[in-house]
Length: 409
Ligand code: RIB
Image 1 (cartoon, rainbow, N blue to C red):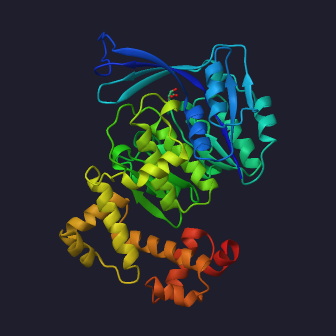
Image 2 (cartoon, protein in one colour):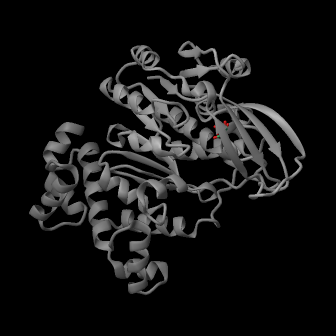
Image 3 (cartoon, helix red, strand yellow):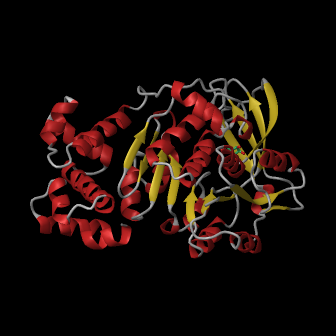
């Protein structure tokens, strides 16, 4: 299994300054540097530096020599990258003294991806290979259509967000990796965490990776919902933090690591990247991540909501057959009414529906991983009434437990 990343390559003009310029303001900068960047290139470099076979496809302009160089130096295969007779895409990036950034882009060569190039590149990849996409090149909707036909495992990072996203068929994606702003904008939900429920309903089977900045990240699929706090570091430049996370996440999938471990590794790589300047140059190698990860401290203060989510999840998981709102309320130290409201706010649904959903997920996991009779599984996850369980299981997975076991086992 290998990674094909069809994405942008940018020249980043990075201006260090006191704060991000406000409307109508003029400000002197401390320094200006030029770095290789682009969401696509950064993600390819992250995956390759994690040690996974990575191909980068797209277009580089006549002035894109430094981009080709860093891709090659990082071990990315550039045989699918086309040189075009145009100016390369570039980004103007302001970095404040607090390490925050603001970016605007000129697409240039990144907008010259033809359908012929897409067809010819995709013909070199097969079912099971991972296709990584962002929203900084043209024709991404076409790439999704064609890659889906070829049964590639498609990961979309819908960044930067614009109207092009509306053309993309999320039903054809395997994974969606997005941040808080993207999650609320796409789902229309107020709280980013609530968008997870929206995606689950809207696109059953889609695996969602929601990044929450300094609050960490949440991964969700039919069987799992995993929270990983961010690691605490002093930010120098947050540019490419998300790209480093995405590249390492994709690499972790290729390596076949369990999701919880993938989240830890991707979060650590991303944390290390923000301690250095620049986009691509800040992305760490696998060995550095492994060496520094044990000494990184998780940021457990920033995300009260995420922590409460984890407490609720842990409680339900550990008491799947017996969980009650009263006991959860006692554990959290709140009244039953307040706990009910909190569960609704955090999970987007009521305690009983959330528990029901978790019981189905646990049953699905047991069906695949254990040879237990279905009746025993139903009792283990807390149901006496078998026909009720069979009905809700079918509602969630579209098939009865035995059919599910046969298909997934
Ligand atoms: O995600 C960071 C990247 O966004 C920068 O490297 C810049 O090129 C923009 O594409």
